[in-house]
Length: 187
Length: 440
Ligand SMILES: Nc1ncnc2c1ncn2[C@@H]1O[C@H](COP(=O)(O)OP(=O)(O)O)[C@@H](O)[C@H]1O
Ligand SMILES: [Mg+2]
Image 1 (cartoon, rainbow over the protein chains, first blue to last red):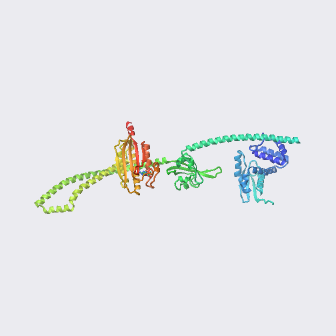
Image 2 (image 1 turned 180 degrees about the vertical axis):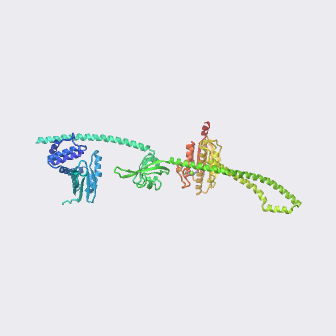
Image 3 (image 1 turned 30 degrees about the vertical axis):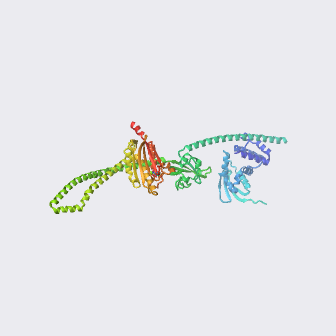
């Protein structure tokens, strides 16, 4: 897992629960990594999972909720770091379609050794999109959070239904997305 | 409480410092590997460009609009440019015969196949190549152009042509030898018969004058008046006086004619079957006479032939080769005269001269034809260069002549423009060669 994700996890905790909570989490977690996490580094997935595990125990929330909330938060941060990908897509749907063939390709260029997940797509209708997600990290709640974070960025209403899940024995997680267009701003 | 807060902040500061260190070492690592990668890349580029530059195959990269984008040394040579900057941006189509770009290099055309393609260099020289093209893609698989890999096969083509030429000459030679053999016997007995007829006629003329005397005497004596009258009538009817004058002349003309035929047949035989493909001492004047006899019909309707053959030592050479050279020069001269006469009716003259100049034998073939424009003087020796219409010119004559004279005989072949226009081709062959070979 890229260090940048660790860093975003840290700021997520710090922003929402305070830096003392984060220090407590660090203190109570056994990690493999000796030394600090920095953005360009690559660290064992278990370290992140261990930190997250400690966090949900301490904060008394479910893993899925935690990953989801982190996903929403993470999208904002990633988008701020590379606004070009959002700016060059005309809407949420076309942005999501670029994730696999453009964004993850760029990620691998920038971070050699990054293990990006696999997405494949189906386009049953103009306002629908089916995304199949596979990754041995099985972070589908994170994906859901990211999707909602993306919808927020584009100011679009998105309905997301996870119709199959690796945690329930499927080969991949399937997200059935329906796009309801831009949310009208109350003037 | 404050102390706990301080402790937390301290820990965070401590970690932040470590992070800075970690980041610094990552940056160092990255810079180092970037430097290494760059060095490696530069080495690879150096290596590849050296390989590319030394490749005998022309490599031409062409952009999507058909413009030349990159080209290696062999490519510059093939297309006739001095430096890449001259070539870059020029349309590749300007170096191809019409229709070839679409045929061989369009994206949906023959890309990937190997074809024989003619390239036209800047200035018009044509080169035969074996050419393969391939599509170039960027790292996303988008077509950005194509690359042509062309191997020059001029030399191979030349050899093919030479071989075909040699085979043709060989079969013409065999045919000529056969025909000469077949014709020789009848010529001989026609000739013999003519000699015999001539002698017989002389004998008969003697007899005839004896008869005349008898007739005269008989007439004076008044004997056989009727018979004598009959003889006179017949003699008048057949115009005996005319016959007696003309028949010997006719016989002489027939004799001369048959002697000419015999000469031509012999020249044919010599020209086509010059005896050997090894060098041997050759009488160049005789070679010239032979060739002029054979080529007579090529020029006799357009030009007067002037011969000025000086005394020459024998020169070591391949007679058959020199036959070819003289023939090509004379035929070119005839064509040039013919062409010039379309606009200027002055009579054509082809002058063939030989002389010794120091340690060289010089052969000159001069005409008062169109002449060769200054800018073409170098090009005329290029293989495939011709200004003549298809069927008349192959652009091979002077290239072959040049190869024979310069490469095979260590001589010189030069083109001069004589005063008053036209063209002179000057062949210089070293005489020293003879002595060297004689001594050996
Ligand atoms: N005597 C000449 N006078 C003018 N031009 C000549 C003469 N000889 C050769 N050339 C030029 O050189 C060209 C090449 O000659 P050559 O190699 O014999 O090929 P070809 O006769 O088949 O054209 C000719 O097409 C012609 O333009
Ligand atoms: Mg010629």
